[in-house]
Length: 382
Ligand SMILES: Cc1cc2nc3c(=O)[nH]c(=O)nc-3n(C[C@H](O)[C@H](O)[C@H](O)COP(=O)(O)OP(=O)(O)OC[C@H]3O[C@@H](n4cnc5c(N)ncnc54)[C@H](O)[C@@H]3O)c2cc1C
Image 1 (cartoon, rainbow, N blue to C red):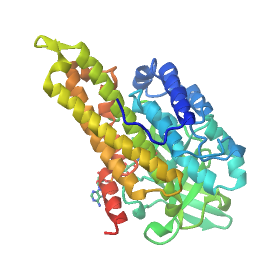
Image 2 (image 1 turned 45 degrees about the horizontal axis):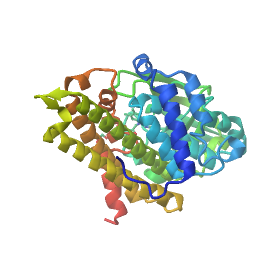
Image 3 (image 1 turned 30 degrees about the vertical axis):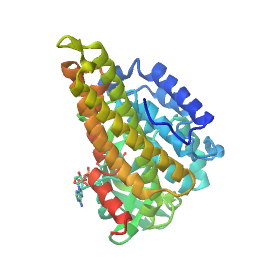
């Protein structure tokens, strides 16, 4: 039913099967209960970690797999997203966007202290960029750090930080230089540092099973050795990280769309209206064709992106275009599949209902549709 992946290998197919079985056995029987409760059991982080979910791109010395593969990153994201309850993937995956900067830029002492635990899912970590005053315009970041001898003192606040209530470690962007993107530095901050506090942002539209936190930095002193990468170059340091985050989101949206399509087809085959199966009505068949075409296009594009990322040519423009095209496709597919379900789709406890509530976080988070379009056009040299 879906496009072939010209880059498929036995290893990737085997990984997909492993993750699929994990999702079916360890997530799907419990996910609505967790969603309503607003959290997942910590053991799930560790089970997912044991599959290697956060080990790609991390050296074996720190519990990683010692190699990277963009297709495998996508497989983890897509298969978990297929469960349909986005908060489960967000709760586990929140740490994913903080691992790259730690692996690439933290000193040995920090890596030895925390990386293996983060990668194994024993502890949480978060990337902290967005602030109450805005997330799109990273260049106007207000949280700042001032040097004081062998320390930096951080002041400010961060908003919407996924996993922020439970994480032990944070990668925090702070202004250390002048205005603009070239004055931002990344710091490694531990949750038990004096002056750090947090509160939960609750009552969200979706992603119930994951937490998003407000973080407060009130004269938080960190050793100068906690600086990740070069001073004032923090934005450049996380640019590639953004690409991997967006690719994972495209993969995850592909999984969500497939779940919607499969559930709406199953329903349309079972349901009868006006004396015949729902799926025999041409209007419904056309909805299925439209959904399927959008999924194929996003998925084929994702394959090309993963291939280029793997050969060391991260296609930034394609990643931005894929991100906003996928969220537009998801918006369409979630809406049309819910329409096919009729009133039954509106009830809690089905994948289409929870996916419908998660459309907007994919259109806004990790680089909004508007910002992705801007980036794509800038990449065209315009
Ligand atoms: C559930 C959830 C989890 C999140 N997790 C994290 C996390 O772990 N870490 C983290 O750092 N952040 C996180 N975020 C924050 C997310 O990245 C931001 O919400 C996003 O970058 C947009 O920032 P904003 O919400 O401040 O919107 P704003 O930047 O205030 O923008 C508001 C709207 O205006 C549009 N806009 C802005 N500028 C322009 C322009 N020049 N032209 C046209 N339109 C424009 C935007 O696209 C957006 O639609 C999360 C957000 C959510 C909702």
